[in-house]
Length: 50
Image (tube, rainbow, N blue to C red; front, side, top):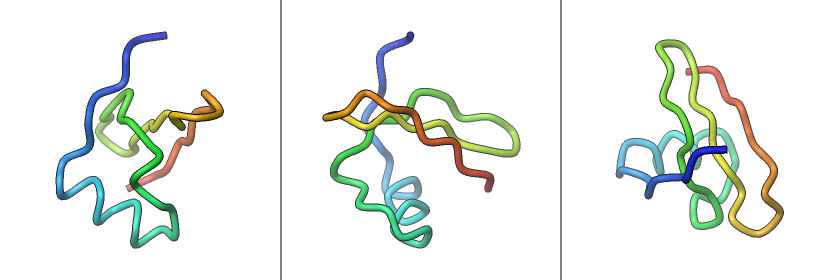
């Protein structure tokens, strides 16, 4: 799996609006219709549609 990148301000607001704490996540992919985030502690991915 690729290394996760730090979240931008826009991505942090997006996660907060979906009820997820952005402090524990890194961005893996930014697709046209969704984001894929990686949890820092568990290593699980989170796929959320925009």
